[in-house]
Length: 560
Image (cartoon, rainbow, N blue to C red; front, side):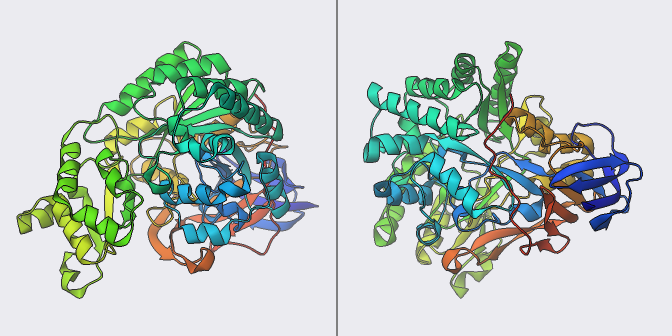
């Protein structure tokens, strides 16, 4: 007897081919049969009635490394159609990690990924030190989705260099030690190596994340160590000092694909992202595989001035980084500090998160009743009304409310015509959900549903078969996820059943289910009728199901 039979579904198989009306049977976590009339003998029978059935979404850019140790359901991703998550992006991992470096690792994540230190301190279960031990812990504890893990560059530097990882370049001997750790991680089953050189990525006290201090020689040595295994993907969130030409050299010397993040459209420098994609195209034409991670979502963040991630990448903001309370308020009130921020925003930049577009910054929630009328107004509007500089308006309001005012900023990817070009580029990968990080700032874990709802149904910028391919088989092929990403007999039964007429993501709302009752932003799925991971149902029309077994696999074998 089969475990599951889905009858009368419209199959989008992940290849980009036209859909097919068929039944699909599952046994032992695998797709047993696909056909026009599969015999009805299954423990669970679902009458799809023509609803769309596709492979589960593969989310290639998540930060669930810490959350997985306390929440095996990696909320909210399974309910949003995700059946496989790649963790460790940007190199912001928690393994390897020595006991004496745990606090530093958590404080780095607090700053760079907008995570609460109290949540991390309460939640992380440190049953590991090495990368292999971390994977073993994930296997023991189980997970609702499949997981592939990068080994992280910043964690490698911290393991080898301790506190010096954020202060200086590595010696040749230290680079050799890191390369050995990379080889060991690849032997243990890492999906690849992840790093960052982005100036927006700062750690504890405003110090640069460790990987930002790596020389080109260090990056090359580590990617060559990864490539010596004959497999693996190198993923990097690049800063302006890391040109695509260097990434092409890395692909050439390692023989492995290079995943380039984060390619987002900047309205104040609209040609930059397309110049990068042109360089990526040229590299591919020369036989060097580079893939650009792009987003189908406008990058919008909620923040307070106590933790203003959108502006923390500005060089002029460094005086404020790592400060709290009265010390932070004194910096924000300083006229010289403010003028430095204004001067930097007025200067051109290849890439930065915030570019002084004050019409895209709004007051979301105030603390004092006397400011209630300001809610939902843009800072640009308030500045015109008050006859003040926009930066002064934002900072003065925040200071008057002890930095508790909640703002929202639409930072990048707001030009939909430009974003449509990114999504359809032959060398782009729809990604960048950042699920598991920035939990109080934004929630793009439903990126796949948004792609199919907004960009396919509402904007018609691509077909549904192609959108499904980009969310499934494309990633499976890049990472070497054998037997996943397609609806094929013998493949893993990672499945998403949905209604194309209503699929999408709901509005964001705040929930309080992190360790200690801390808040995070949550988004409900729209149009999703069922999600299965290796044949086990993890979600239905009402959302996440937690009564079944944890059927997700820690994926450590890849085919290239």
